[in-house]
Length: 294
Ligand SMILES: C[S@@+](CC[C@H](N)C(=O)[O-])C[C@H]1O[C@@H](n2cnc3c(N)ncnc32)[C@H](O)[C@@H]1O
Image (cartoon, rainbow, N blue to C red; front, top):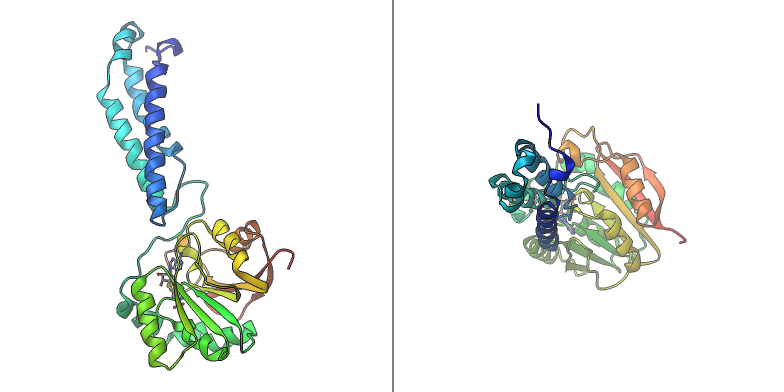
């Protein structure tokens, strides 16, 4: 069996190609991040290149070194394309190693989602009145409902804070439009819709409570997102996160149902401490955080 000595490896073209691939995958990651997908390490692309090029290298004998150095091997082209594709796919999926996963999903059909979000049967396990009660909101509180969806919580919270304001935040323009009509139909004048994005909720003013129901797992870089959120919380501001438990009979795919420990760890990294973990919701965690030092 023949082996390829280290000296026969064409290091220079390997480094050039690796550099190009890193550049392209980084570009793909940056572009996809601007669309709200997570940026992941282009190292995956580099690994793919090495993995695909290695067999070709092994096949080449060292006595063909000169030729090999000069040639653009078909496997090399395949490796570059695969590496770039890999980088793009990893960036889009949000499942790359070393990054917190998030569920990339569009909610651009409010009428369709209203059938489940506003299904009266949801009330039995979502317990909205008990959730709002547990938040102990003053009548004039400002509340951000981040990932408001069809406004299931926004309208209920708005009724609980008649002298306050609910900022219904969503990334989907159609959801915001749906909430505007819903709030107007219910005669609620204290619901303000806000177009957020994957980086932050883009709130126009500080809020006393940020409520995040079934949306935490959709946010890409959560420590950065919630670190940024501390700046738009009042001095006594809190963040309440409600999201599905692993053993819930329904909810997002299993990989997007987090243990409470994961949420607490991420929020700790974002600069928060757990204030209370309510246990009464049968399907979801209900964790309330305060920024450190407040
Ligand atoms: C599963 S729905 C939950 C809706 C609502 N909170 C409820 O409990 O009925 C998730 C919502 O979060 C929105 N969303 C996803 N990522 C978001 C983000 N980064 N900022 C704000 N909203 C987001 C989606 O468009 C969707 O309307």
